[in-house]
Length: 231
Image 1 (cartoon, rainbow, N blue to C red):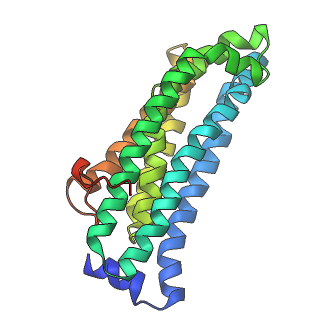
Image 2: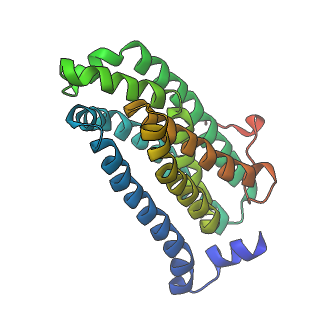
């Protein structure tokens, strides 16, 4: 912890930015490659399948927005509290952001399942695309909470100087997704649903990598329900 707090609070700015930025950039690049490869595999199923993924995209931009809202907001606060050496406040902010993300994810999933057809139609799904889009979205809705938590934890970990573990979570999930896509889509002949299952498994693996860092008390922050502070 001392090494990370010194990095965030005392190290020269170029050194601190380099150590934090490079892992973050690598993780984002891997995610970008994954998105392209994922679309490539789905496009081989047919135009309707590609359309289904495209139609579902705005829904999962909302997932990203919610995760980033809590992650970036708490990350900024965590960095400032580390600078002031208020470690109790760091844990309170991390716990509050994490559990609010879970609550938001559960609400999002519930509403998404209930209103899935109107939402997909609003995003442009035709009758031909709707079947594929529903199969794709239904699977991913059930891991949307995990995806939100991943984004929140990624930002919180980077804010406390643990950029390498953040990169590992992003990269491992993305690479696993790339490996699983052809297996579930073509080998198991699951089509668009296979792409969703591959993504779901990858998100769960990323979540395990990130959350174990907190469970094993390797992080500066401690995530506990009793530390939630809403004031």
